[in-house]
Length: 118
Image: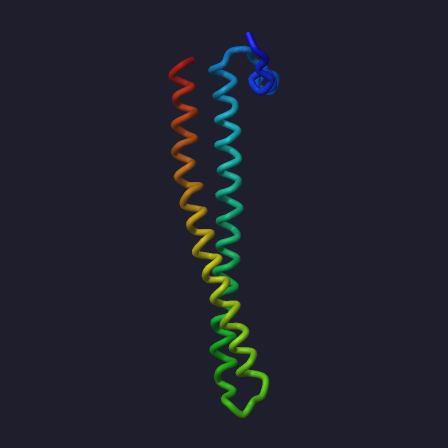
């Protein structure tokens, strides 16, 4: 039989020589990591949403200065660029969050399969 260093390492981490226990351990660890990732990305989305809302109000207020202020038009343009980038980043993070949430169901199914084998 050939060397199986990854399986041996998993057995060591799990504390069992039974493969179903080892793989259940692995899948539970992956599920926890995925949950932590969902929490992290969810918080980043909330932070971006708050920044976007604050900046929208700031843009609105800055536009009220009119054309006679030398700084406001340039600042509004800069904030508009940043606003668009943040909105694009938020959309991308929401897509990542959706994928991670799909992974939640996948990981739960994997853990359940190992329960059936036990």
